[in-house]
Length: 515
Image (cartoon, rainbow, N blue to C red):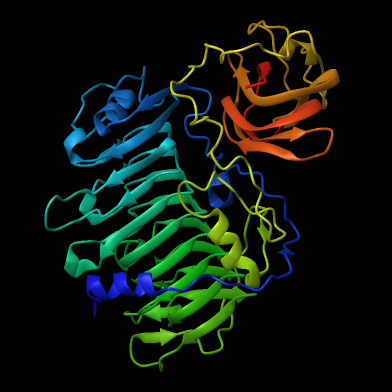
């Protein structure tokens, strides 16, 4: 059943340029503008913030990643690990410590919490080395490529899964990653994105999954139904044989994904699973939705999807495609707000935003991606040759010193001026968990870098936007505190808008720099 590697790769090379018609953006009644922060089911169950508010370290080897995990004060101490270079078996060893449980043949995120792994600089590639998340919570993985992870042959890693989650995993956000193989099971590969054994509250967004026999699964068997609450949006599934994904039990939400060349089957909802399938674009594919390879039915709610050159086989035995005219056979309630791009523009939007190295661009809900500096994948500022650390300011003059400040409602006993006084012992807090604070000048000032510092006892920032207050333009967006760079902007007022947080943020300093 699996196609040979040569066939798969030649098909990829033969693919022509992507052309898509523009479409009208359709929004749900709870829609909100994209901000670049965590989305989907990962916002539920207390939210997903990763290592926000903790130390930031740089790693160029797998061993250094493990050392960073093991060097924390505890297994839950927040940490952001900026990764650059190629991570492989040759530079990944087991490291021991009371705050970690690592292994030599994979990146092991086991029995830990509050961790962000983000690719920076010239990029991060996990070559033939998978990422394993087990008995863990509050994990963020962004802007990395994981490729050619094998379960048979040599070398092997992570059971052949690019990213695998199992055993009581909660709140994982995987965003702007590229997951790829060079064949199917007969060539030694397994799934690109697997969840099993009680894994819940996961979002996969703006990512590329390609050239694999299996895209991924939720649930390892018909009896493994403790998984779910998973969102897949603005992802590209390309040249995948099946499992895009496979769902066993639980609830999943798929919206604004581009499915291209699903060779055998696509979304396989079975064993009581319920899938909400909104405004996706299915192209040059076969049996893209249904219940396959089992007599235990799954269910789906469909709306707004485009089926472009999709073929449907006849229903027979354990093969039950939803087409040729898919209709809903269940209803799925979604607890979070989301914005739907029109399905006709999904190929274009996904091509501009999905995968590693795209600058963490996101859809703004009108078929036009937000465009931060393409060299800047997020708030961790990969352009810096060294990490400034949570207490060391970037080079240059802090333009906020001596400037004015204002904002939205503030908590009792705090002041806007505390964010521009150079004293990390004072702070501004919003009156709730979200709000905004601004730095302002009497005349236009050029700013291209901001450093946000949190005071002791602060809640974590789940999502934020930096706005040119003069024009309303979004300069940058992301999550957590730290330093972010963007294209130079001449402005009189810059605003930090906190749109999601865990607890109440305490902004000690809102520093601004010209470069």
